[in-house]
Image (cartoon, rainbow, N blue to C red; front, side, top):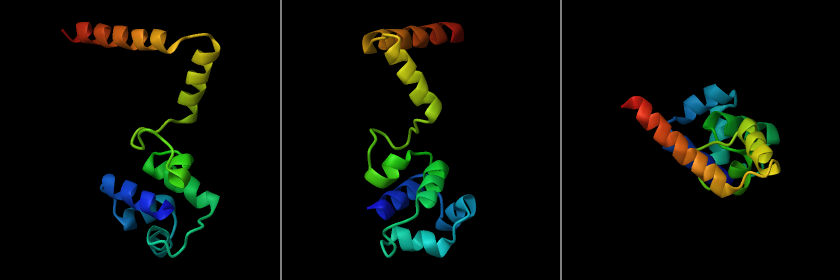
Length: 110
């Protein structure tokens, strides 16, 4: 399953296995063995580096957990969301801010 997710993400980004190997520093043969399921227990170092290069969370690589793997949620975003939640900002207030900001940006472009 990990290999399937890695292969799907790599292909969706138009990346060859050779390019992924160069960008991660792992051998193409090792990546191939992961993608084909021959090697089914990659190291955490491998998973961390692959997720970084492919722009998804480690959780997505390992568990398939995310709403959209194409939109990475880095530590800064997680911290920002937690700060907003802890300050009492509701989801509705956040949505209203986003709508206002879209409107403001649209007005600037006119």
